[in-house]
Each structure stands twice: as C-alpha cells, then as structure tokens.
Length: 168
Image (cartoon, rainbow, N blue to C red; front, side, top):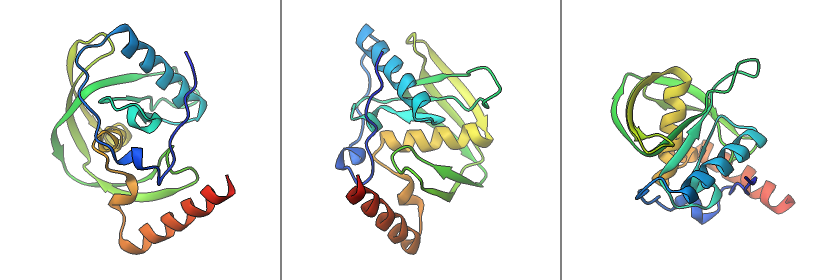
C-alpha cells in the first residue's frame, strides 16, 4: 500500500473521463488499497481514481464520523440510476484544498456498481452519502465542483487555486 499524490485543480488530468474497469484484478485491488490509504491520510470522505491520475471508473467513500468505525464503500464502474429531490450541501474536495462551497445536488440517489470483490450491488442513498456519491461520480466524468458554481464564485475559486499553486 502507498499514499499517492492527489492532483490539484487546474491539473488537466482531472478533466479526463475515466474508463470502465474490465475486471477487479489484483492490480485493481492494490489501487483500491492505495486510494483508501491516500483518502484517509488526506483526510477526506471520498476519492476518485482520477484524482490520483488513474483513469479507472473507481471511487471510494467513507462518511463515518471520527468516533465511529470505518465504513469504507468501494464503487467500481458506478452508474447513477435515479436522482430525486434537491439539497444544498457545503462541499469540499481533496483536489481543491482549503475550498468549500455550497453545491446543489439531488437529495436521494440510486446507484449501481461493483464492490471490491467484483460483485454487483445497488444502493439507495440520501444526505451526505448521496452528495458524496454524486461528487465522486462527477470526477469520473471529468466534472469538478467548480463546474457547479456561478461565474463569480468560479473566478474566486480559480484565483485562490492559482495563488496556492504559485506558493507550492
């Protein structure tokens, strides 16, 4: 297992669409382990493979609180089947360190994916889990949280990220 480097906006690799995973092989399981270690070290509640420069349709989510046991969920080749209602949530992103913005998303989602063993499952989610699923799934399509903002907020976030990039 290894902690990988998380790509930061405006890295163009964040805009690349991920490719479907043909099979959950030992190398894919190793990638999943690296992603989990990277996500927890960051720390974050979700991570898409594209955020570490891997072009695979995989994301992980763990929304358990600090005082709760881990609840790591692995989504391979996820597909959102249904979106119901609206909610606004203050989101952050490991690819936009230090940035949080209110984003409007569906309140409930139904998703189909494969788990880490390659077994298909469907899940209905609401609240933070629904937000995280939509956020991470967006990454797999090259869509970033900045894309959900109005023009003025986009400019502000863009400037902040450019300044942080110069400092790094």
